[in-house]
Length: 175
Image (cartoon, rainbow, N blue to C red; front, top):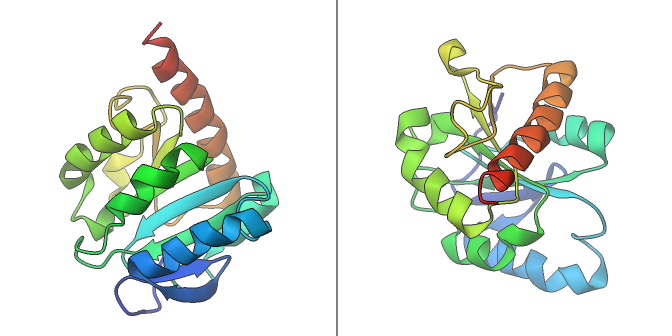
């Protein structure tokens, strides 16, 4: 899915590079009052190599009117923890490229942290391992769905709807 190599820590919004790392995300956060970022639903994808024309970006806009902010995390040193602590509650989805972490098992701790931080934000994991696909609530403690890459617009539409449904089940488990 992500095949054009970018510098680690690159940040793109709707396919346009806006900077690198935490500074670019801070700039986006400041711009939110001007309506640049937060006019509608926003998803953040933490991935290894965001590309200029990410098909996910167009899919999210077409399917849900959702803007995609892609954050290249490289080896994991570029994870914007502070930014996520401040803004995760405002997001519509958090999308994680498991391949950037070395697979789904390596994501467990980070996903548990995200769940505590923003329990009502659906988490979608993307994985190139076909055995990882999961639309059930089996992994509900760490994510709402896991989608195999590459995927179609139809599969992503199903993933978004299922993630919202599974997340509501997750939230109800606290009641």
